[in-house]
Structure formats: C-alpha cells, structure tokens
Image (cartoon, rainbow, N blue to C red):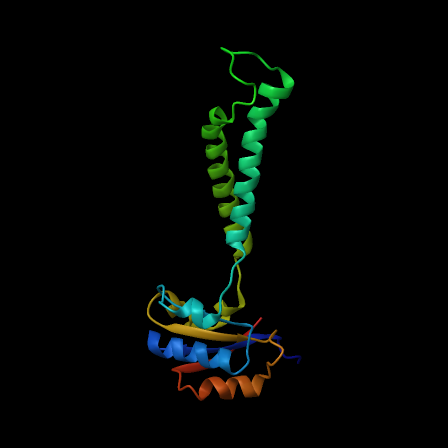
Length: 177
C-alpha cells in the first residue's frame, strides 16, 4: 500500500513563550517554509516568522489608480470634452477637483485592500492539511502549533521530526496531505 504524501511536521506547545522560541529556532535552523498557529495574536510572532506582505504596495497602487482616475474623471469633461466659462474661472481649476479625487483615492485603496487580503490569504480555503492532525482543533482554544512544510528545500522527515522533538513540545505529528 502506498504511503500518503505529507504536508509537513507539526509540533504542539502549551504557551506563547515556547511558541516564540520554537519559531525562532526553526528559522535559525534554516527552514523557510513554515508557519505558526495560535488561538490569539502573539506579540512578536510575525517578526519571528519573518512574515512579509505585499499588501501595502497593492493598496498604494489601488489608491494611485483611484487618485488619477478621479482627477481624470473631472478633468476630461471640464477641460477637454465640454469646457464652459463660469465667471471667468480657468477650465482646469484643480482645487475644485480635490474632494472627488480624494474620495476615489480612498474608495479604490479600500477595495484593493479588501480584494488583496482575500487573494493573498488564499481565501476561501475550505480544506487545509493541518486539519488532519486530531489535536489541531485546540489551536482555536488553548494550544500553539509550529508546522514545517515538506516544500521547504531543507526538509527531511526524520531530521525535521527530531529537530522539533528537541524543543520538548507536547506532541509532534506528521501532517498528511
């Protein structure tokens, strides 16, 4: 009978101090494809994971598109499409364009942020391999988990398992796909 492919190796810890120490140790050991799970936000966990996101760049680009679009949406009809002289004011009186330009900047940045979060978090995710570990349901209640993924270039099942066991976790599990 063929073995099931594995997603990785997961260790369970009882407190945030052990979780942070394990996360730092995993990174310092050279693993780069790993994740940590916690029932509440843990201060310093994102730094320990060396987590980086492209969301700020996406939001900036979305806001820039909204800004340029909002300005052009007013500039074109008032200056190029159908210019009208109102009390001797210049056709391209840009201070009048500021409120709508600002609003469209905020609107496009917010929509880009929402869609970007959904896309970058790969939502919706109805199935994830970590749910195959029986005790992982405690990740939403009281336990903390670190999982080294098998996609990591340094990953070797036995060495990753013994490495995690060396941190004295509550339990170490192989996570099947």
